[in-house]
Length: 243
Image (tube, rainbow, N blue to C red):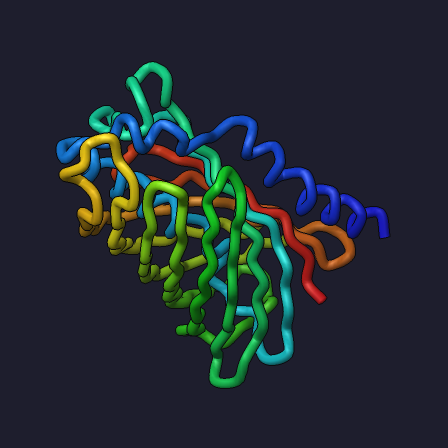
């Protein structure tokens, strides 16, 4: 019960914390035709991150609820769409994700956020290339597909991604690596430069992830990972419970 209370507190407070340290407020006044593609690629990489925490699917009948966080400490040097470079070095994005095990080695999942004026919702599928197993010293692999849409006061996005993930189970920790591609269409809804209104930016960016997943008591788990995308290095964290 104590662990479930901790999960509730994490789900409740993390979005509030995120609002305090990240902001898209500068987009309208600072976006230009030159920095828009870099902003779009950085955001695409963040939206595609943290959709998986191992290479193992849940399996038929499994269910998991988790809180994910993606933090980019330093955006691409050409991404000044949120303001001067020195004033906008990082972004943090929380996500709530629910997953359910389906037949035919499939997992379905949905995810959503609503913070700092950005509302995002979507979901996807995970297909286990290997049969789900809990034995130690075994490899697991899966393919992850994701589609989601979001809207902010000054822009809207449609995002799609695909990943290949491999993990290796040991008694205490499960290392995992993944490689994927993000594709996103960003539409400018409001800008100081009137010529940018309704302008669309089409972005494709590669993304890699390397992380560790830790099993906790009472069907809890936690993971930390580094991801690599157009912004350079970012970080992911997950805290979840299986039912």
